[in-house]
Amino acid sequence: MNAVAIFDIGKTNKKAFLFNESYQIVWENSVTLPETVDENGFPCEDIVALKDWFLGCWAEMKSQTQYNLKAVNFSTYGASFVYVDEKGNPLTPLYNYLRPYPENLKEEFYSKYKGEEVFAVKTASPVLGSLNSGMQIYRLKYENPEVFNNVKHCLHLPQYMSFLLTNEGFTDITSIGCHTNLWNFNRMKYHKWIKKEGITEKLPPIHDSEDAITIDGDIAVGIGLHDSSSALIPYIINFEDPFVLLSTGTWVITMNPFNSKKLSFEELQNDCLCFLHYKGKPVKASRLFAGNEHEI
Image (tube, rainbow, N blue to C red; front, side, top):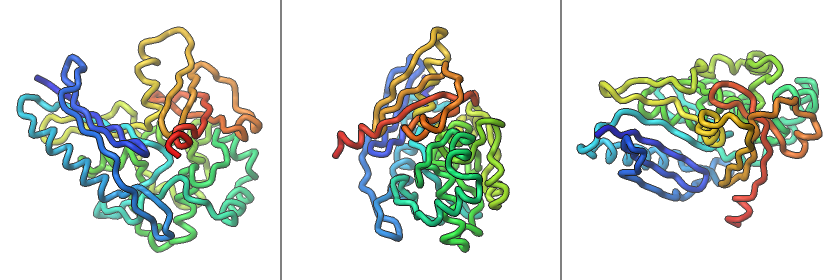
């Protein structure tokens, strides 16, 4: 019987599933991995432990000889980059998107690029410091230029998970569209600042979210998706009437794919933003850090 594998990498819980052709779960694994700390002592994902858990699950899935493993894809939390070198090795910790952002760097950045209001409206990204993942690359460039110069690929976490199986770098539109400061929502292309800062060549080519790479003869490996954006897919495909989707987890997020009105700066200041869904269309959203509050 054919089966497909799904990895759901949350900030708190990591889950792996094997589904049969009837969409029944025939194998699963769930874990909460202990965090480590970065060079400044701030808590962060243990990228080595995550890789080891993932490859262990993958090996166990492939050992289920009663199933013919046909495909795998990944859904992970956003705002998180893995910087890999020419050999595919991570060069830094997987920095936490809650890590405080240096005020001087933030002021320098926004003064260079027309100020917070103009920039935020153009990129549909509230001013969020490290939660704007593009700002993490900017920080790496200016705080650790030697490491920055050795980066071959800046991979959002979903694409890093795919990279572990394919050794190929991709960029996915749902990850770019997740309050990254990278995407110009007015022109629907990268914002010009990333070219000016020499970042463009470190971002792998953008691929369609439905693309897959074949490994081991006939296993299709997806390029990965941002988790909140991926949650929309079955509803967009199956429902024609307008709806608002409420996604719960570390963040509680409301997503409205039917509101095409441009975001105002006031909305952005109140933690509204736009995502890009898997077809590249903007999705208006608002967020509340309620899951984290619940954990605390």
